[in-house]
Image (cartoon, rainbow, N blue to C red):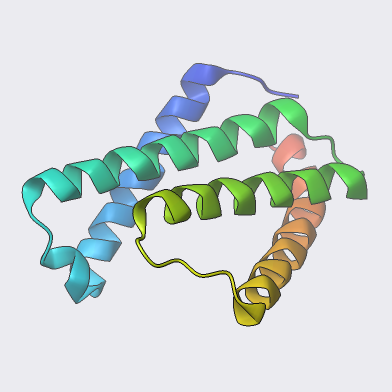
Length: 123
């Protein structure tokens, strides 16, 4: 396992810059935000992406379905936690639970099958 907080901070920052740029260019609602809200969105995305990367490299193992499921549950939980904190009317309906379940399955598969590649070609 590669457990380096500085690496996770760098990856989190790069990810946040790219996501913020894509959001600003592609989502009209993001363009309508004032500078304080844009900065706050940047900070929240930085915390999420850094946490996800750190958890991935420090607390998961390859060739372990259980580890991949833990990673995907952590990722979905942190995203919904921040979404629930900052969206006023976030209702958990049947559709939300189905979508989050599909996200957990997709992330589990992606983590499980890409983990060997990640460790074979260490960054």
